[in-house]
Amino acid sequence: MKNINPIFFVDLTKHFGMIKKYTLIGIFILSSLCGFTQKTKEPKVILITMDGLRWQELFTGADKNLITNHKYVEDTLSLKDSYWRDSPKERRVALMPFVWGTLVKNGQIHGNRDLESKMNLTNTHRFSYPGYNEILSGRADDGRINSNDKIPNPNKTILEIINTNKKYIGEVAAFGSWDVFPFIINEERSKIPVNAGFELAKGNDLTPNEIFLNKIQNETPSPWSTVRLDVFTHNYALEYMKKSHPKLVYIAYGETDDFAHNGNYQAYLKSANNTDSFIKEIWNFIENDDFYKGQTTLIITTDHGRGTKPIDTWKSHGSSIIDCDQVWIMTLGKSIESKGEISSQEQIYSNQIAATIAKLLGVDVRKLEMGSAFDFVK
Ligand SMILES: [Zn+2]
Image 1: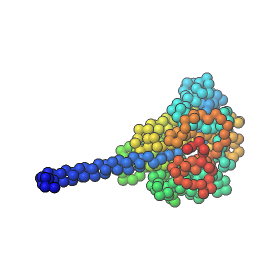
Image 2: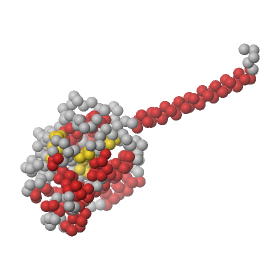
Image 3: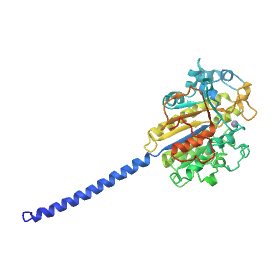
Image 4: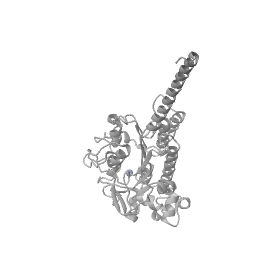
């Protein structure tokens, strides 16, 4: 010990102190990073619905009996130029290029009945509130949900179940074009923020885009009194995702159904095409956002089909219209194998969507009365 220079000893202690200090800082930074990585690796789900888009248009594009029909199309030449092609496969690409490009390459599309892939509603009403109730709560409730009236949903939706799970409190948000969604989701009981109908973005932290959307939504005449144009629903949702990063988002586009009820096939097709570009924009955002990238599953479906025979019934749907319980689903993202368009025999149902969302988010709903999760979602 006598050989130890006391000065050296003091210096060494000092260095140890510094090493210890920097090691601690290093551990702190590392653990924060790990914490962040872990947090952002939590699964996220974006559920999208397109109201009343038929599987016939999704899988075969524009209908030859309607696209040249002057009863339903004002400018048949320009509509044919946009969406008519010789084969159904070319027509569907022209109508929904993102779905039949990126999505089909990387995800799955179910419901092409020409290929024996079948998806149906289980509710017998075949209109919107019963359809959305089935999708969101995981079961038909034909007795109580039998109108589109603004009645607070007695059933808990998967949005509410997730929002009351301690892992996801305050991490759920919904946006809809139709003003009945605050009731379908039971905004009051579920405490889920629902921006629907002609509601504006609210809060003290509005972004410049939200302020601008509020301004132009007020300035834009809507063709309908209960449904706003989807451009507002879409941009409110996207802006909220950028700002608040919810883990479960529901976006309900509505135009396709309302233009169809109006008998406007031109606007119905244009809306389907426009929604395709909205979905593309959402996917591109997800793929470039650290919070969502590689951790998010997109589920896209519809609340009901529409009539086919006689041809005029394309405008409508309901218990008296044949085949409008025929629906479809598309999935893309985390946990989804790239199987493309499903061409094997299957029968799936809309009441399976809620449990699938729960499965993706790691929430156990097996004790609840709802359709079982799709086995194609891992
Ligand atoms: Zn409708």
